[in-house]
Image (cartoon, rainbow, N blue to C red; front, side, top):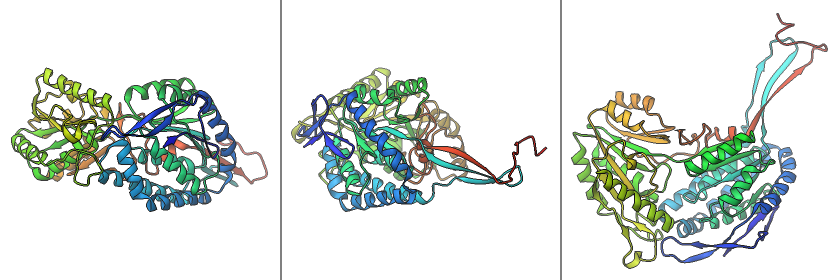
Length: 492
């Protein structure tokens, strides 16, 4: 299957007609090819978006929402097919893939509801016979740049609120996962979204992404990806006074106190550290454990890890699939060597799996380090793989301090039965998301998603907060006094 660009309601060939292969990370099979587009393709998409957005903004918001309702129904109808494509393209196990498609379904219906709730405010004026209100208006043209690890969920987090708010969208998906982008675009078209309201331009970040960021007619950039790329985007957008929303990963920790239910904590660690093979921005890569229960926790964790089946995610029994490609595999292995060199003790894993049925894919053994110091690189830097570091602490206060000692601030978790520690932790943990007696993953679509510090720049995906990225506030004053009234002057 070939994935070209979708511009002004049509699938069109890129200007350069160059392509890259789409690979199944589980077995190396070629699934198709994707266009490697250029700045000229972005220019065509911008022209289509500009033309479409003016008319789309005039469509009443409840009618715009009807398109999202239809998108949600189509996603629901095709959930299993989409999940299987997602697993083949990205590698996550089929159970997780179904969950990701469900996120898209949920987001469609949730944001469709916002078509009748794009609330502003009415407020009393300080002057007689004068009416005052604020309303949301679309920003204009939105550029979204999405990663490969959640190729449909994150795309819906960004595109659905942008569209219901009256914007037009230009979307650059990751080159590793364009098949899911193609499926979602076709669903938009089938649901009746007018031509030009969403446009797909495939290709590299260096060419397509850069062209989008630098284009003067794209009013906002919403990006999820690495901290390094996000900083570059922020710098360029800052010079252009362009609005930008960034979500750039984390170094998330699960805190396990000495009164915790250790079996429950182990379940949370397994799911958070090794789900999606650790390739989640919310993945647990640190376990901060009270020294009194450290050995018991390690014993239970290692025992449960023995039963993690690794392989092709289409196998319903598999719990850990491949990582995305060979570069990711090598990066993960390099971090394991760094951990060894720093003096951390490797309890499990630490090697590439390449025998038998795994020989043609990109598999890394789930890995656990212990006796890790908070300052070690493996405890500070995002590895983005199935590697977790166990850090012992002596107290609750030390656990909070260690959790907050990294440059990221996305997600954190605490396992404890002490209600006082629960409320103190939710106050003092400096992350955008806090879980109690659960892992670091599992965000729901009606709450804001995002983090603090190096994780982002203050904006949020998901929930009503997502609308803040894609709308401007307009204040409106209507004076029906029949005379000129001057605020702050004529009322004093």
